[in-house]
Image 1 (cartoon, one colour):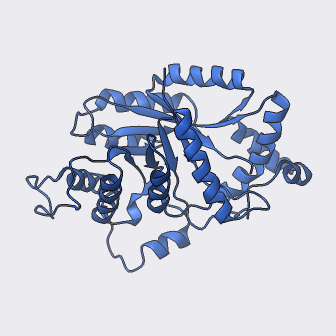
Image 2 (cartoon, rainbow, N blue to C red):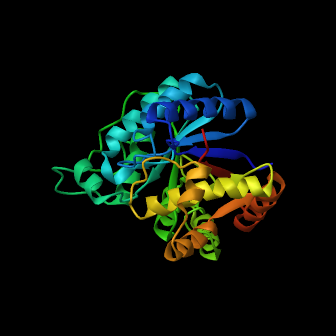
Image 3 (cartoon, rainbow, N blue to C red):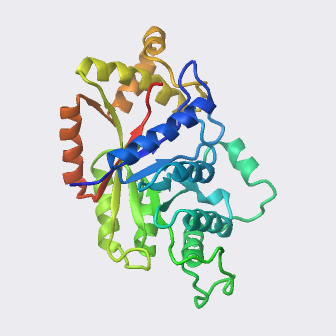
Length: 315
């Protein structure tokens, strides 16, 4: 049976607030732990009012302290904004507190221009993304033998275990880095579904180089899934998701995740409706039976090891 994992954006529902959203995330993680989900991921989003989590490391530690067996992961840390050394220290600290339960998911999303400026203020030079991944690999494995600009440097605390390392992506570059460095690869099917994604994943598998992290390639496919007891209920939930996704992608900053009633009353213009129709191709919508069949088809197409479900829920 293919393991299931969850990615939670910690959405702020209409009429709610960030405090409640983060506790909804906590409660859902605890329930997922009981149900036997393999991993619980939390995202990193900046300057998005409708998403509560801007610091995955803090939320991960909080969730890990209230769960027992489920692996906790960043989905993901936007590495170009940060020092690889400090990221390694943060995750080694979490792994020290919760051994064999921490994963680091790495991304390189550019985010909003003003966010990039604020997070990188005063920096005159940025390391290459792949070099940052190599740096993390060094710090997680205590490698002082490799030719490196900080050859003698190690990350503390010193512990016998290390986080699992995964690279998130939608294109060939991330897949190439993951294959070359021997990390797991997560393909965001919810962002770019289609045959090209299948080829990218197959390329990662074909070019994978064994490492201290993995001896064989491992993939996870991430999906937008909206499920209801009936097709009508699922469609209602999708109608609430439609405007949120539309406005987020236009950088228009929705203040909350809308209710079904608000979404229905607002409606769309003809131009907006076309974009919504395109976005619907990125989602799996329906009853539990239909959604299960769709997920099984994706598992077979990608020949993946694991499925991650992106949850956006109503409070």
